Amino acid sequence: MTVPCATDQRRVWLRVGTLLDGISTQPLRNAHAVYDKNRILFVGEDSPPPHLVNPGQQKPDLDLPHYTLLPGLIEAHAHFFLEGGELDLEKRAAHLNKTPSELLKLARPRLEKLVRLGVVAVRDAGDKDGVGLALSRLCACADRPLMPYVDSPGAAIHHLGRYGGFMAEPIESFDSLRQCVEARVKAGADRIKLIPTGIINFKGGAVTAAPQMTTEEICELAAAAKSFGKQTFAHASGDDGIERVIDGGVDSIEHGFFVRADQLSKMRDRRIAWVPTFAPVQKQIDHANLMGWDAEVVLNLKRILDQHASALVKAHELGVQIIAGSDAGSYGVMHGLGFLDELELMDRAGLPPTAVINSATGTSSMRLGFKEKFGQMSPGFLSRFILTRYSPLDGVANLRKSKVVIFDDNVFESDESFDSGGL
Ligand SMILES: [Zn+2]
Image (cartoon, rainbow, N blue to C red; front, top):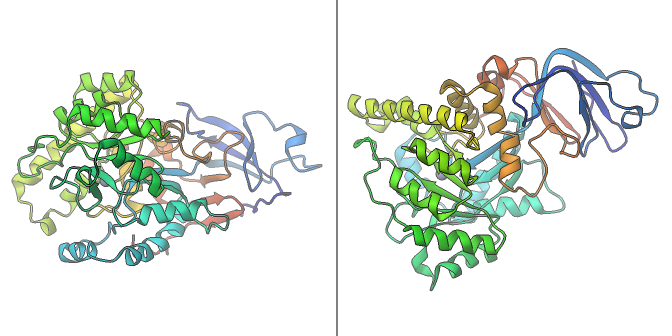
């Protein structure tokens, strides 16, 4: 099976057994899709009208009753400046001392690898070395290389001396909260990243530090961002920190460990999306020996993940907008491959496969205000999608298996020889 490359003139017409559009809860069956190198022209269960296919073309280029077509994946939380696959703690610490240009040089080769894995867009989640901003600029330039769409908040915002110093610049460097946000916008930030809380204390099995921002501060930062036309995303775990970011009016909550059911209802009502990031905690279990965690800590970690899984299912039942992001770059969470781990963890947590796929495609594209149209199999969206004979409806882990990635006028066949070095 060889998928033809689309061009400006040459349209490609596929018929597939199953089509996931990234939005619907039910797949289309025996569906047609027509696209050129720029965009999708037609999707539907009926044959496309003649004016949308190549002149004189009577039947699809390929009829693939055993294949599934779905949008390319959107990774909504990754740190390009970090290498997730590096498991040596000393090397990870040394990595943080590299210069911005060294970090950017290490990040660049990840771009094409992500495309080959089927990741067509990445929302970078912040660094203070300008790596994400440089990649966002690269994405916007006229001679853009083969790369996913990338956008970035630049440096995250935190309080001096509190959690996040490795990826953030403190509020204290500015005269006001508004000036702090304005400086990010002037530096080219596509959105604003806040760090209102610390992280989970794995030994304590809870978020033990008090939140670092007040509700009033979060409100003011989010309002300033909005006045510049930017969305806000907030790192928050622990229910009192989560309460503050909900009341602060952010666009999405990242991590959200220990979120309560009543808070999920508020998030739904206020259209605050949730990016649950299971992978970084799972990796602490997978690599407990390397991390030096004893049996008691591992039990804590498992309990936290079980609780998180229940919250995810509850969020889905309540209708919270769930968006997939892996926190790639964190310990053990590789770029791209770690995102596939995240989707599998959401599947294992009990989210229906279509909901997992939608969280990684259509929900993201609808909610996060990206500058390009991807993440849906709908007319007008970019021609960036995945074709696979291993249906993700039979288990999202199937997305790891061999697949075809269609990306504009490129067609990539993924295979086992994929080099995951540097991710
Ligand atoms: Zn993060």
